[in-house]
Length: 204
Image (cartoon, rainbow, N blue to C red; front, top):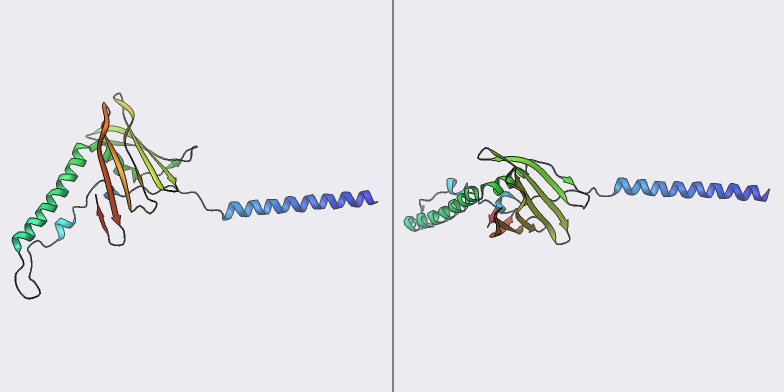
């Protein structure tokens, strides 16, 4: 009789412990945070915003005391800044058309997490009507995010690391190292970028 009672108690104990472990496991799975991909650094980390120069008044205006502002100086400052932005964007979009096009296209695609924990954005894009493929890898660490862009052109080059970079987790600053071209993979540019989301400002 005692043996039967002991067996029943043991059996009930096993069921209770198993149930408790199952409930804890389910609770952990349902309440745990879902792993999300890192945010790609903003477009402003490569391109400068030219809209400012098409919407601002460059005539100088009038001071609070009623006197005219220095129209010439105002125009020269505006022109100097506009020229620098235009030069940079032209250099980036024409001189580095392929890697920049690959970067801008990445925002239109969803990533897939890899077995090593990295996230992969993989897609095709065209530059001058020529199809290329891109593989953008992003990973998260305690220090922020890290990025690598590999680009291929059928029959010409495969998985060329055209640029790599890093950013802080909020996406307020970071760097890019851009390499010259597949047959000359030497560093070409080091870009350091910042942005202030609340003030809607950015700089390269």
